[in-house]
Length: 319
Image 1 (tube, rainbow, N blue to C red):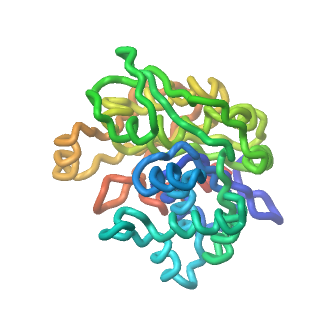
Image 2: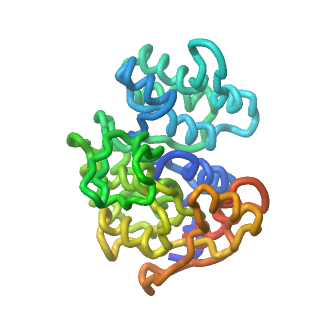
């Protein structure tokens, strides 16, 4: 399905969590497309973890990032306010946006209504949908049989970070948000990633109904592989390893494309990452299907991450 559909904006659904979704949305929002972000509800670290524990709400952190990515460009102060993080006192570590979403949830009695109100305040251009409205707790089994409970303990490992994850699973049943299913089914393009494989992307595929909806959707389906490996999750992974792992939870033959950066960062930057046990993700032995798309997709300065504009250009070309 090449060339943008005529007479209407194509519908793009981005599935994930964390900074990866923010990167994709930041680039795509500049195009005439209808954007929907479907966000993992597995986060239980930092400010989000404290608010989950004390107020029993769904995790606000990743949805806050998505809201900010889609916020109207006419008032950046509001976006900065939502991202503002207190550094001292009893509020130290909390972001204003997380606190506001918590307050809105208490006022409205609904996390989804809280998101809608926050979206109105930020003049959000698109939709942000929690993948589930159930209380979602993530665990992992390592290759040595050890069980790690909690997304934060998988994301920031206290165990040997070289140990591979055998599988991740939910401690209890989580059913898909009906709005998430509807968005996926009606999409023209479904994007998975980039983001932490086991803590931001795969958790969405553990929710009942999500893999089935992706398979059923007539959209083009693309997986954006991370630029760098991560100890504790994807230690020494190639792009082929990322793909094989994702397909373990999604199913084979579902994806149409896999997008991989093949531009090497500056050697100075690579050495800094290698000191932390991280390496550039090489393509590895990628299959012919899904179709591999390789190119220069990284930023020229700062952290070795996808450049939002470069990535968006590739993704829009798949419509």
